[in-house]
Length: 262
Image 1 (cartoon, rainbow, N blue to C red):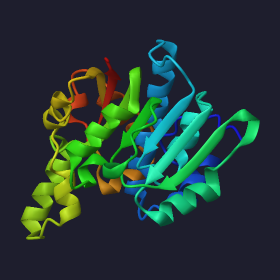
Image 2: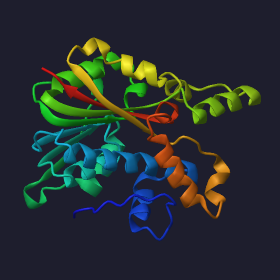
Image 3: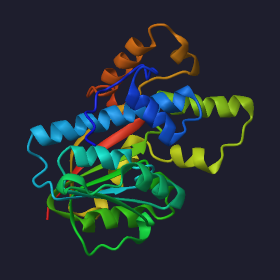
Image 4: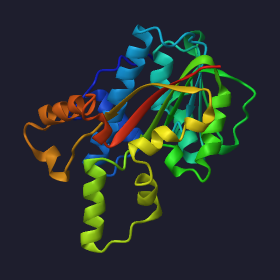
């Protein structure tokens, strides 16, 4: 079933797609739900702009590294790709992705498998790769980057996202932890390990990954925001400000678009 994706900023119950996302991803609180939807909004916009600008040369094979419950793989398929392969290290997530989005309809294939991003078979090459919020969780990030480089066809596009430690939301989170005397656990340490400038430098040693553009989402967010009557408007402003050339480096989630040069 084709998803006609429409950006949403208030994440209301009147949006059927938001209800489906809530069911699949089991958001623990409104904040995680809203932040996830902002990332989906931005990825949808990116796919559309990459297509319109002719930056995606072929729509044959796409790879979704860290596919989670599979919705991004579905978006990639609906953007025109004939064969989308989603991989994740967590069997329960892959099972959920297969349940909701595995498909062989209309001459298109969406399939999923349990695979560690650090140990991928690099014999096949892809026309497009998405790797969102994965690298910060790996023990060998440079191995993942090396694999992405090998898996991309020359001239193909990769969209890589990481949490941006150089952002107001993560700065305030860090201060909150310190003031409360809370121990920064490993998961939070992972998220605080990559300010945007370090994320870009991760790819310097690849030798054949050219950075084409960067963008970001979520410039600000506080827990009480979703209770405000004008939350949808405020979150829309949040979204578009975070994408600007002036403020994208301060956004919580940093998106990078690369092209393999050779």
